[in-house]
Length: 203
Image 1 (tube, rainbow, N blue to C red):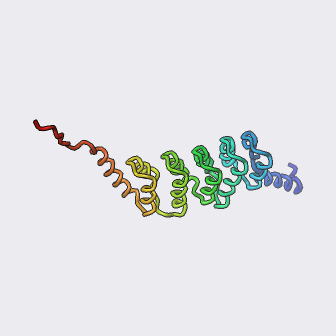
Image 2 (image 1 turned 30 degrees about the vertical axis):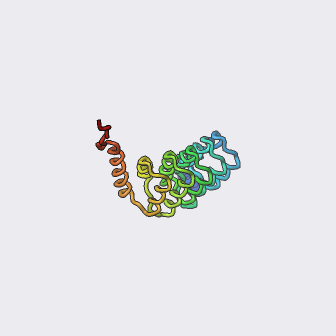
Image 3 (image 1 turned 90 degrees about the horizontal axis):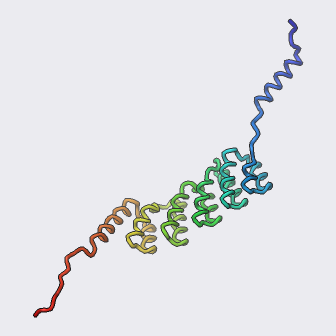
């Protein structure tokens, strides 16, 4: 039996190594299908966007977020050395009326998925823009801040926005807020149920 030449062995080995190193081609078409410009897609390619991230960015773009904001949000994740997984959170914030700059500010603090849900709830509670921003700034700065659920409970007991902010800025905890909300709810439930003497005219 004829032995293979050294040359043929080297060719086979080279082909084997090349095959092992080759990677499947990445499908960037979802980005263009979402309406993203070619230049924006090229910018994301240079940032080594992965297939999972492509799906996130494409969905974000399709929801109406601009190319520049999509890239900025993606870059913010890269700056914090992790994959971009905040597409859904960014969509919810945008849908709740937060501006691109507000969403980007949250992302730059690496709080998109942590703060996103509460931020949307704060807006739904009916707080003013300035109050929402004050609460978010405290949260992103690591300061003790009431959860959106407890803020909503206290607001439903007829506390004013100023009173709510005063409690938040004093460092009130969720447990303390729960106790006050419970007390105020009981007080409101019993208000007007006491015996009232009716004074009639004497004959």
